[in-house]
Image (cartoon, rainbow, N blue to C red):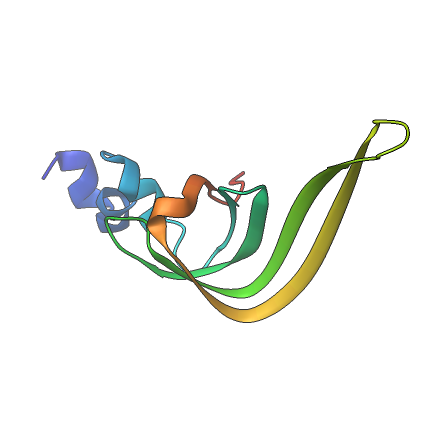
Length: 103
């Protein structure tokens, strides 16, 4: 343990040495998760594993679909939102996990 970390034991636990450390520091915080299939989640991260399987609570899910108008051939973008108390997210569908902003 470094001398600096010995002065502040929480500092060693708050370092990011591996990618999953950043997610570990986001436990019990609100995170943004982008999934395959144009799905996005915002919610409180309760648990995760090395495969990025996650349990997320107080979730707001946004699904975006693009349809083509048959007459004008214009793209029509539709978004649907729903709230879910708890959601199990399978890790193979995760594209991005963004931790909360820290100031």
